Each structure stands twice: as C-alpha cells, then as structure tokens.
Length: 445
Image (cartoon, rainbow, N blue to C red; front, side, top):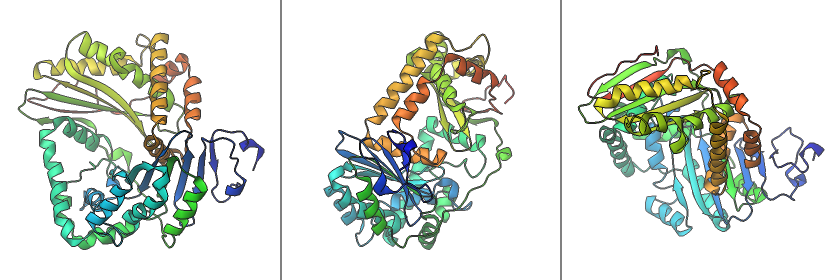
C-alpha cells in the first residue's frame, strides 16, 4: 500500500489500476470506506462503523424515472412496487416473510437517475439477507397476477396529488425548471403507466438493470472482504452497462407557471440554479441556504413568517448532482397574503447576494454549527451513511468520510460565502403557484 494512504481516514480505492489490493489494506482504523469494482462491473463501497450493530444497504440501479421510455413514463414506479412482490423461487408472500424473519426493513425509492433498493438490518444477518436482496434486482418475478394491482396502485398515487397541492406544486416546478428527461416526477404519468404491458416490464427491466452504472454501499457492522466475496458469487454472470442519459439544458421552459385551484391556500415554489457537487461553490452555497432556511433563526422564517405573519410554512433547500445544482424555496400561505409572500421570498433570495444583505459572522456561525450537527446525526445511522455513500459515488465517483466533510465545513470562512454569493448566478428562475389566481412576478424569471 502506498505511503500516502497510511494513517488516512479517507476512502480506500481498490478499483482495478489503483495498485491497492484488498489484502494490503490497513486495518488499524475501524471507520474506513473501502471502494471496489466487482467482477461484474458494479461499484461496491463499504464503511465499517465501530460501535454499531446494524448495517445499512443502499443499491442504486440505472433505472430511474429519467430512463423511462418517453411513452412509458412511470414504468420505474411500477418496477419499484414489483421488486417487493417476489423474487427468485419465492412468491410475494414467501419473499416478504423471509425478509421479515431476518428483520430487514426495506424500500425501493424511485429517483431521477436510479431505482434504489434500501435495507436496514442487524449486521449479523447480512449474509443471510443478501441472496434475498440480490434476487430482487436480478430475478424479480413480476408475476402476471401482480401487474394490474401494481398499476392501479401507481395510478392512485398520481390521483392522490389532487389532494396534496404542496407536493403537486413541486412536481410542476421540476417539470418546468429541468429539461427532459430529468424533469419527470417519480410517480410517472397516467398515460405512461396505462400503456405499460406485462412483457415490457420484464424486457425493459432486463435492459435497464445492469451492473455498469450500478452502485451498492454497505455501512455499519459489516466486513468489507466478506461482503465482497459473497457478492462476487451472487452476481456472477451479471453483465452489461446501463443506458447513458443526455439532455439539453436549454430546452427547459422555466419562467412562471400557475394552476388555478379554488382553495383557501396558495402554494408557491421557486427554483434557481446552484453549483454542482464537484464545484468549489457547493459548500458556500450550503451555508447560504442554511442562512436563509436554518430553522427559526433563518432569514425566511424571520422575514416572511415572524415579522410579517405571511405564511404557515416557508423553507429553502439546496440539492446537487454531478453536473448541476438547484435551490428550491417554498411558501404556503393564504390568497390574501400570497402576493406579498412571493415578493418577500424573492426579495430575500436576491438580497442575500447584495452588499447590504451579505452573510454576517453571527449568521455564518449558526449555519456552520447547524450543518455540522446534522452531519453528526446522519453519521449515527447506518442507513443514512449507506445512502450518502451511494449519492457521493454518483456525484463524485467516490465516497466521502464524515471527517472529510467536517473538515471541509471547518475550512470555510464567512468571506468565502459572501465572495461566492457575489460571483454566482441564479440562472433563469422558475416559479410555480397553485391557488385561486395567478400572481405577479416582479423579477424577470
């Protein structure tokens, strides 16, 4: 092993060509991230967490909503249900009973770029659970009698948006702010789900669920070598690479969109561009978002709710991907206060980037403390750590330790944040509203 790696608390990369063999890895430090590429081509990240008895598993397969065929948008939502309804030789009930007997909490979230399989269980039962979990991806039954109930369930989920305008406005915002196909809702569309045929479910899953582009992370009470050895056996014969997505950022319509709904509430969502995860500005942007929306001391809560009493809910969040970032802000209010709520929200977003509205040292300190607190809390959950490692690998091509991220936060200064804000661009903003009448947008979006 190279001297540069000795004593490091960062990730260990065992991919072909790195010159680092599993047998030569240092074992003195318990909390380490080990990265391998298995023979099938799937990336495997393992982080052993000392003092933890559970293990979290996160497995992303390149079959998210953006990968759905244009005339079958929502097939990924159907897959997410069907993966939980039998695999291998076990039908739906038998497979569920086998996982329950092992105490496995599981889910199949649909994301933009991936369909995930997540699980949390005792580390001592991982070896027994892995064959059942692997079968979910490699050998889902997709029984004929399950398909129509799953279709109905997915259609009901879309129908339920009518009673959830807060979620619906977020769907509208994403559809308008991002270009196709990465602007799709994870729920799919009525037309797409209704058009899916049984043989297409099986054939397209075989085409999408490939090891190339897939990544699995294990965190907690887990031995990296033992897990890799077992997965090599279970995934033998699996081959191929997932579909590569392309999109044109210039095709996103953005601007303002309104849906008339005669209710006593108005839902307002705003999106603007931000740095991608790999960009230096991603950490200052996180601090800036925490200043805006870091609890009851955040500017949005203070200005929109506390001082003016305009709303019952207000927040902003910043998310990143490998090539783009996005901040989304939301206000829930009444028709009488909707226009002023939007005006104040937009005003605070813009003021943050002015000399008058620069981040103060006190705001910076509160934001940094809050960020580190959330980081520490997430580090206590094996499931959260596994999910974070998978996200990191997708966005950066590697996993990051808690120590690395904490050090990155510690290195920031308030001047770094204000310098970033002065030099950053919001891009063309998007505003979506649901309520009795459209609002006036004072800033060009």
